[in-house]
Length: 146
Length: 294
Image (cartoon, rainbow over all chains, first blue to last red):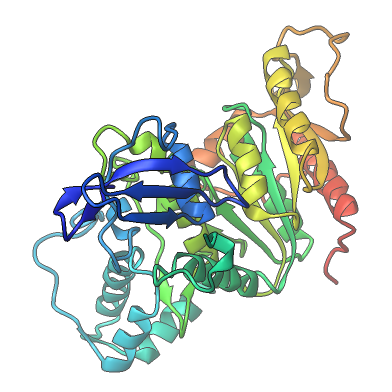
């Protein structure tokens, strides 16, 4: 992380690192041009991240950028399972989802949704249904004893 | 100069707020779970997953409401053993319903979500630094699983932990003092030594250590209908484990084949292995002061 003194357009330099206080570090930067000072006060999680990297603030800096904000980080951990299910050949018959069923799907974690959608659509097709509604969802729960 | 704790709020990052919100969702989601038991070891390959599944089966046969969370996200085995590979995940009104085994044990295993030919993916913003993020990311994912699935009213939720003594302690920290620990070893000095370290590390925390089970304590020879030694450690070898022993379980090659096929132990209580598992299950019940369902 770098701090820039906007009026001077000059990178600010780390001046002091306060000792941890209840998990918080106080890091003071100053502008070498105008002397303007600012303090970065970390919370315990930020401190832990730094410590996890095996670096000490003020001695040497770690690198890395924050994850894309406001995006669930977990779906990227689950590899795509498109085409991974046995018994599927060719393009499956399209299945519609009602708004209510879609709403229920939207309520569950993003990393489970693709698998849930694929499985429910397969369940619906096997029963000759071309639309997933809440009745189908409840039938699936009952069928699998959930 | 004001310090961190002098300032109200977090300046808009909402990090603490989101962490607290997930913790609240986890607490609420597990509110109707009577007991949380983590089955760990520290040592790999001692049969934690097999023992977890079979103990769950023995307890389920007593009428208890049981769920298993396969916490080994990188090497999940419960999906195959419990027969929920490719299981259907059904959205409920707010959370996801859990797949169940044929005998009614609810199971979450990453193996149900990820084909065995693929692995959990860890993207990292910093090149070659994923090792610094993996544990943090895994525990965040575990939190999301605990918060997002319908655990409902259970007598027992069993966590099948990954190997690693340090990991065992990390799970103790993450799961909190409500979770008791059951350690699994095998009759080898190497395994006992690792498990002893796990026990020592856990003893420094607030989690209850129920005891240990010695797995693969000989093997069951069907031809001889007898238990024969599997490890040449000598009968005089001390266990090194100064915690209660909940029982010993011999290895049964047929049982291992059943696990590969996702067939539950079920009505195998007449075998020596089945009887041993029954005894361990009974010990576990007594440790937790759980009564079989009527």
